[in-house]
Length: 252
Image 1 (tube, rainbow, N blue to C red):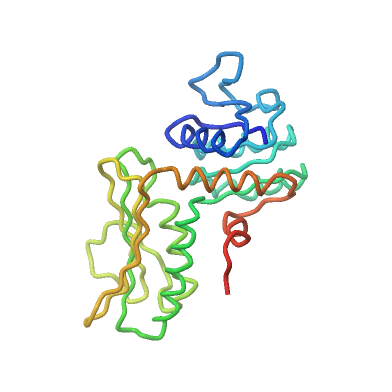
Image 2: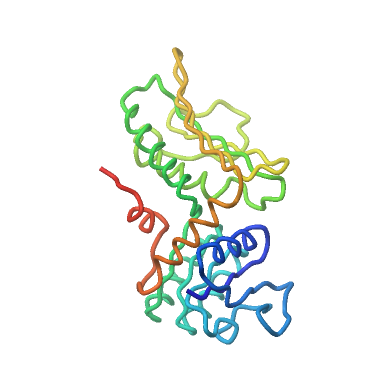
């Protein structure tokens, strides 16, 4: 397949490596800081996407809706790993469905992280009636990360709320008070060069259960995104990363 890489930061460079390692071709590298008139382009347009089968995007939230317009016009499938654009979700859905192209999006394309999310949700379900176990989430990322909490932490919180009905709301701010019984606290730390660490705590007076996913490099995120690109080609509609992952994993 011929891939357009949208956003050529650290993740974009990781994606490029995986694309080539898996025997695919980089058709275009698109980033506002680049434009050599050849393989590099500054903007996502039908022209810059010409000849590409799929785009893999790790860019900025406010760019996603406009980029999807270009994907739709070009008939180019897309993988969107950018987070923070949920306000434009229905607009994006309408464009994708009208164009008949395929787009898969999500907060974390790492297969290991997706396994972690499922394990955490199942662990929550196991203690749902055991009120001595309180539940909390903490995540840590490098100091350059622009969002807090991470999209993965928010997805994790949603999964826990669904599996543990006694937790009814999520609090992501600093707590200068005692948390409510029905509150799931999601805390964040930013510092250093940490690619990403997420931990779920199931804590009781007698013991603590911890479930952690610790990314060593960004390679796992990039590999998952390229696998998603291989999967989305030929499909029509807007899909979540969970739908893609469900076909990779054997679940009971």
